[in-house]
Image (tube, rainbow, N blue to C red):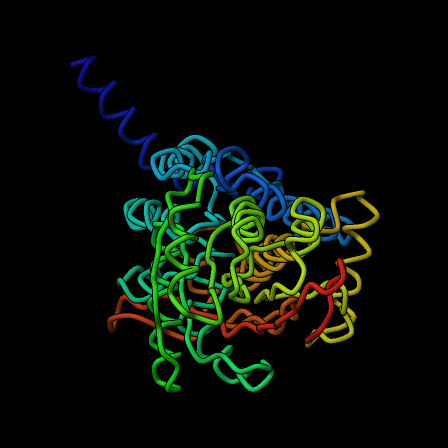
Length: 384
C-alpha cells in the first residue's frame, strides 16, 4: 500500500512539474546552440547576441515583472547532442520556450522533442524548408528558408557583371547545404541559367581539393558555396591555390565576411556573400535605429565585429520570445506558443511576424526576413 502511494505521489509530481515549475523568480529561456564542434563560431556569435538581448530586456525591467534568464546548452554541432540539450532544457531546467538550434540538421533533430513535451522553439538560423512544412505546430522561424533566399537573390541577378550564365555548387552535405543547392539550382534554371557541377563536402572536411578540381573543369563562371564560416575560409584558400576561375558567392548568411578577410586574406577578395544583416551599413536596415543600437551594444561588449552577421539572430530571437511571453501574460508553453502567432517586433533584420506554413491544423510559423548582398573588395566589405 505504501509503495502504491509513493508511485502515485511521484506521478503527481511529474505531471505537475511541467506547469508548476514555471512559477520561478526568473523567466527561463532555453538556448540550444553549437558552442563547440564544426560550427562553433556561428553558434557562439548567435549566443552572444542572445546575451545582449537578455541584458537589454533586464535593464528595462525584464518581462512580466521578472528578469529573464538564459539557460544555455552546447549542442556540440551534433544532432544527438542537440536532442540531449533540448531534453535537458525542458525536463531538468523546466524552460517554457527555447531558441535554436543553428543548423537545419540540428533543428530537425530537436523538433520531435518539441511535440513530445509541447514546448515552442523560435528557430533563429536554420533554412531547410522541411522545418516549417513538416507539421510541427511548436516551431516559429525568424530566418528565411533557402527558397526565400534563392527567390530574393534571383531578383538581384542584374547586379552581376559579367552576368551569371553557368553556375556550379559546393555545399556541406547536410540538410542546410543540400537544401540551399536544390533551391538555388531551381531558381537559376528558371531564369535560363545553366547548372554545371554540384559537389558536396562533409561538415568536418578540410581537404576540398577533389571537389574544387572538378568544379574548375566545369566551365562555369560562378560557384555557390553553402556551409559555415570555418569551411568557407578553407574553400576560399584552396580555390585561390587552384586558381579557380569562378567568382564565389556564399549563401545562408553564415559567412562572417570580416572573419574571412582576417583568415583567408587576399583569397577572400572579389567574393560575394548573401547576408541577413549588413552591420557595416546599419543605416540600410529596415529599422536603422534598432540595428545601430545592436551594433553599438555588441561593440561595447568587445565581441568580434565579424560575428555581428550571425549575432543579430540571437538578439532578434530572444526579443521575439520575450514579446511573446509578454503577450501570453505568463511563462507557460502553450500560452507562449499561442501568443507567438500575434507577436510583432522591430528587429535588427527587420520586422518580425509569423504566417502559417505546413499542413492544416499543424502549421509552423514563418517570418519574411530581409536579405542583403555584400562583396569583399580590396580587403574590405562593400555593397556591390
